[in-house]
Amino acid sequence: MAQIFGPSSNIYSKLSIVLAALLAGGGVTLVMAFERSPYKTNENVIYTQPIKFSHDHHTAAMGIDCRYCHYTVERSRSANIPPTELCMNCHSQIWADSPMLEPVRASYRNNEPIEWNRVHDLPDYVYFDHSIHVAKGVACFSCHGDVNEMPLIKRGASLQMSWCLDCHRDPTPNLRPPSEVTNFRWEPPEDAGDEYYAHLAAEANLADRQRLFSCSTCHR
Image 1 (cartoon, one colour):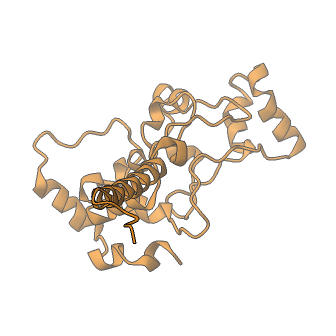
Image 2 (spheres, one colour):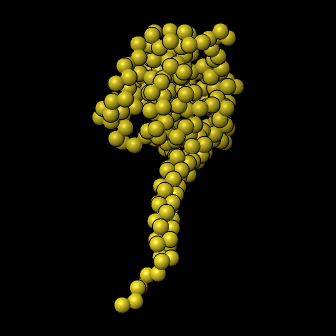
Image 3 (spheres, one colour):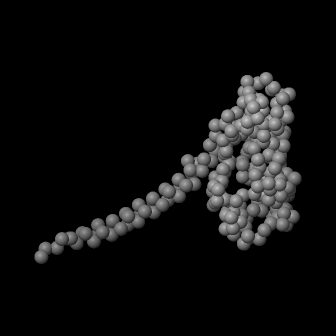
């Protein structure tokens, strides 16, 4: 009976196994790269909003502290979206007749909240508490990026689990005095070294590594 496969079939079979392995590995690599790309995370993507609110103007130019608008950030899980009444504290006097701010005035007149499009949106199965991060000295900049330089708001980080774990693995470099968490112009002392950040970590009384890495810390 004649052989179906000749001697060269051994080479082809080995090459096909190697090719299959390369394709599988390449496929996994592509999927992982896509999962971490801005196409998936929406990092640096500007979201269309009902009003062109400029953080750059309000924080950098006007010097308004983040906590004036996001006033629950120090005591609540949520940083809160400011109600229209708070906007009107200023805009009943400043730019009171601006056509661009008519949606704000209409919201105030009709007692209907403005429907903002959420930019920093975590999945429902993730627990995140703004207040504990602020209390420990994690700056707004660490998660939200250069908000003070954003004419239109965009996501400043991927917000993926691996990104969070990078900080939880070693939060010390992201710490600053709690009084400076909203100060985008803050710079550490010129002579700041490991001892300075170790002091900040000690003052913050950070949770131990096991708790920072516990699944139940972020998934409850």
